[in-house]
Image (tube, rainbow, N blue to C red; front, top):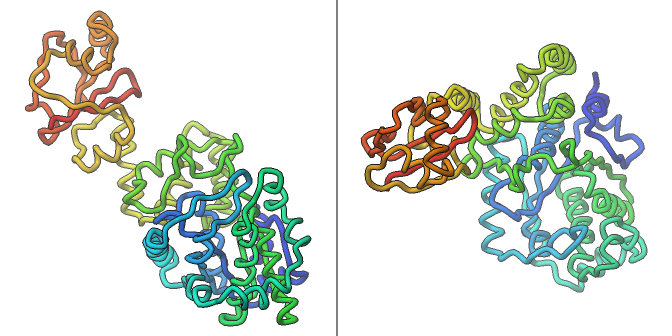
Amino acid sequence: MKLYEELVWRGLIKDVAGKDLEKKLNDEKITFYWGTDPTADSLHLGHYSSLVTAKRLALAGHHPILLVGGATGLIGDPRPTSEREIIAKETLNKNLEGIRKQVSKIFDGMATVVNNYDWMKDYNYLDFLRDVGKYINVNYMLDKDIIRRRLESGITYAEFSYTLMQGYDFLHLYQEHNCIMQVEGSDQWGNITTGIDLIKKKLGKDAYGFTMPLILDKFGHKFGKSEGNALWLDIHKTSSYELYQYLINTDDEMIIHYLKVFTFLSKEEIESIEKEHFQCPEKRIAQQTLAREIITDLHGREEYEKALRLSNVLFNGDVSSLTSEEIEQVFHGVTTFNISGDQNILDFLVNHGIVASRREGREFITGGSISLNGNKISDLEMMISKEQAIEGKYIIVRRGKKKYYLGIYS
């Protein structure tokens, strides 16, 4: 299967610009770019489909450029509903360096990272209007979907001009790097075509582009969001264990689509996994594969195996083997409380909101539903003390099969 046909099979092409784009991808070696504004010091899982697509093109022999928008980030890409907050230059620079390190690691030297602030910082306003604004019709800009949607609520001139800046980025990369194609999510289609039009009008040359559909879950929420929070690619912001938990719980309706989008497995491998998975969906074979492929690509095989081990430990309840660092990862976000002094087990459960009353506590304990540090509790007179804590600090309480609490001695 040739590259373009593979991209179509994987569901990675939505809009296309350039009549012979298929030939460029299949038969030539070209330079292309995709971009992101450094609004945080890490990319998140929602960005990962673009990274994987770019890496897929790189492995096929094309050269990727990641444009990190130090200049465009100062303005902000128009959002559908409201103006973006202005980010300080110092914050943008810090964010840019974080993203640069991530991309360098993921692409292992295959990608060039550029910052559009480098060519925009000395560009004066009058020259920009003459060199760029002169070539782009206002009616053309008003017809862009994202701008048209903002006209009723209002859009500032700064955000209105964003598409001119991104169009100039494409022109600059075309001239300086022979970059002839832009690849983005479908929400960037209007910005891609602005760049293509500018190149045509200024240079009389053809440029190309395609967009990828936005990756959503079955409820229409963006991929990579967990309880309203982004899952970061930076391992210090989102652990491999947290990524694993998100991916292993992927819905069956979406899992094969995600394997196509986010992994480098072949068509034959994915079809084999699909068949095996739906014969025994309870084994979550496809979800296990997705987690293994993404975490290994981002953080290495060792981190995937660590995440798998921690997940198994939690499932089996054998939490006493965890280190302090692992406890912080596994129980991040659970109900946490401080402990001081020795306490009777029933007082301990009531005082920290694990049960509603001593009577309920007795019922849970006699029913075998309370565990401390992996051990079931049966003694109603048991005393809780620091000597029982893991590494002298942690008391992990499990109520029932899945409800965990974390007590910490100061």
